[in-house]
Image (cartoon, rainbow over all chains, first blue to last red; front, side):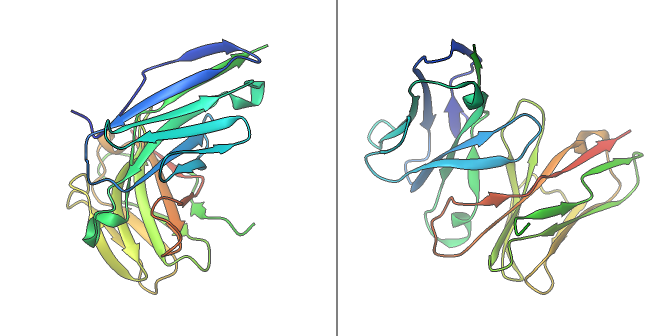
Amino acid sequence: RKEVEQDPGPFNVPEGATVAFNCTYSNSASQSFFWYRQDCRKEPKLLMSVYSSGNEDGRFTAQLNRASQYISLLIRDSKLSDSATYLCVVNRGSGGGSQGNLIFGKGTKLSVKP
Amino acid sequence: DTGVSQNPRHKITKRGQNVTFRCDPISEHNRLYWYRQTLGQGPEFLTYFQNEAQLEKSRLLSDRFSAERPKGSFSTLEIQRTEQGDSAMYLCASSLDGTGLGEQYFGPGTRLTVT
């Protein structure tokens, strides 16, 4: 089982739609959770951190369920500019040498159409 | 531009040759990471430095790969005797200790093609 698993996608939605991405992680010791965005042929960029019960940033809402080891990202009123690959990311963060690196899911591609 | 920079941006090499990539992190960041990304996959962790100390290496980092950060500033990643399977985007990221365990800032990457 992969350490971070995401919806395979791709998601093709019209402008204005609401879209939800799901992610599960296998290491219960993971401490930090994130959504990164990656545009085609560009580097990943941090979209949102998800630290406790979740958080909201404008049209974006991230939720974390530690008991189920499940993370979600909701995008409301989607824009053409939201088209990108969304990467679910986990930091093991259990102390010692493993606290530095991020574990990325494969990503889910979103295409928002006019 | 004060972000993470990487050089070269593209590298084409023949199988068996050695290549070296450079990463310049954000100046005040003491942590530096190397990742590898292939098409359709998320980035995979290779190694990480805190200042000049290399604190962790992935099993993906075979003995043909070596990374250094001699003065705790820029870092180099060398691949010896390249193989076609080494073709990928090599990403560098940096972060500041204590600001959160996932807020890493990525450079634009070096795309390696081994022919």
